[in-house]
Structures are given as C-alpha cells and as structure tokens.
Image (cartoon, rainbow, N blue to C red):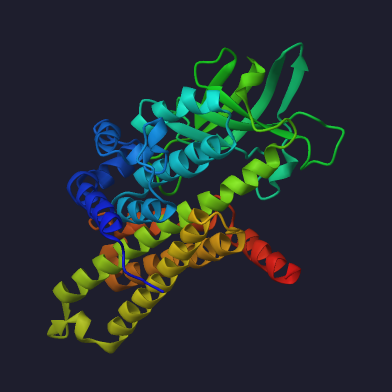
Length: 381
C-alpha cells in the first residue's frame, strides 16, 4: 500500500494549487458578492486543461484519473467553491457519462468541445417534486415519429446560465415503475423551445449560477439520447457515484481553507497577553479539524481510486461524501468560533466559507440519503 502521490499527480496538484492561489483566491469574495464568476476564470482554466482533466486524450482531454480530479477539486475549492462546483459538475456529471455511455458520434461531437472549455456542461435531474426522491420526476418526452418532444420544468441546475450542453433526465414511459421509464437526453443550449429560467438566490456558492430549465416542445432526434431509452435512471445513479466524489473533494477543500484560516488567526490574534493559539481550547479545535480532514481526504481518494479501477464505488463514494461534507461544516463552524465576532462579519472570508460549506450536505445526495445508501449496501452484503 503506497500513500505517496506519483510525480504526475504531484505536478497536477501543484499546478491547480498555483492557479487557485494566484487567480482564484483574489477573486473569491468578488464572485460571492457579485453572484457571478469573473470572465477571466474560465479561459484561464481552459489554458491549463482543467476542463478536460479526465476526458480521454483521443477526444482532446488529458486522460487523467479520478484521483487527479479529486486533487484538483480540493485545491480549486479551497480558493473558491463556486468555481469548484462548476468544474466538478462539468467533469463528473457531464464529461464522465458521455465518455462512458455515449455513442462514438456523441463523443466526437461533444467531448472535444467540453475538454477545451468551448462548451461548459450542466446536469439536470431534480424537479420541484423530485429531490431526494429523484425517480419521481414528471418532465416528459413523448415520441413523435423519429423525434422526441420534451416538456416540463427542471430545478437546481448548476451552471445553468453558462452551460452550452445539458444532460437532462425526463420521463419517457409513464406506464412502468417510476425508476424504469426515465431517459437521459443531450440538450444543446440553443435548441428551440429550451429556455434557462430564473436564477436562485442562495446562501452560499453564490458565484455559481443555479437555475430552473424550461422545456417547451423541445424537439430532439434519437442521436440526442444518452444510453438507452428508459434506462436513464441507471445512468443518473452511476453518474452520481462520481459526482459525490467531486462534492466530497469540494468539502475537503472548503474544510482545509477553514483550517488554514484558523491557524493563521490563532497565531496573530492575542488575548490575555498572548496568541490565542497558546490556549488548549484553540489547540484542540485545530487538532480535531486536522484529524477530520485527513480522514475525509483518505476516504475521497479511496473512492476515486476504486472508480479508476472500474470497481463498484457506490458505498465508498457515499461514505466519502458523508464524512467530507460533515467535516466541511464542522471545520467552518469551528473556524467561525475561533475568529469570534470578527469572523461573523465580511471583514474576514470565513463567513463565506461558513455559508459555502452548508450546501455540501444537501446537493448531489443529502446527508441522510448517503446514510441510506451506505446502510443498504451493508445489509445486502
């Protein structure tokens, strides 16, 4: 068992860290306050090849591993969680399923554009009636000759305003059990009848747009179907196994930012004639934060490694997301407590970290859903 990173992985991590420190960190507060990502960020990410990290080289990507993606996402999210979730969704929820389930024609059409950053990808499963109960979705696609006609409204779509391609899940057979009649469609943003609706006003990750999608008679040919008709729910669940590794990586990045801010403040802030880092109460907080983070990181890397090996990573990805998201919120809470009243103001970026951390226990499978996934896996064994 070797816990050391390879030279390639170390180089990828260091590249992402330099980008995060030099480009993202100075913009993170601006992203939060203006509720949008600075226009300079996406082209800079394209220049570094971040959009196509795991896309095979044959389609213009770097062909790197899920472990590499986890390392990059930790670094990016340490600096800016809004940018981090954009990259996570693009890579884990769009590029990955097209590579795994797409036809050769679909791969040729979309993966080079996604890998270069020419097109940003978005994923749409949830609706007003289907959150944790994802299979309860009611948006439909009905067949009309060789075409499919999509109607309905989707919610909570990350990067809705920037995306050029959407993977959208709709019901194609209402006569079967709800999980069996769902199909995944590749929907270009410029398709007639397709509209990006209102943007949500959120507590955290404000720089990342979150939108509703409106499907009003969207006509698509069979070449837009990802995988098989009525087999989309299986694709959605398999895709989310990878997506949860991405959000777990995000959580570790946010938690690490909290720990680093806490260490810095503990050395600088003086009370009772000495730095607060000299007090055991503060030291214990730092020790617990570091221990939780290391444990979460090992779970994330293990889940990513399993996915790279082609092994079932469902339980491990849920364990990684469960542990890492709770750790992010634990670290954010402790960080704010260490900073005291100052941390509750926007003079320090820790209040943004506190707000950003909260979503990690909600999206791509809420905390309690992860517990259900883990428990069911254990009981099947």
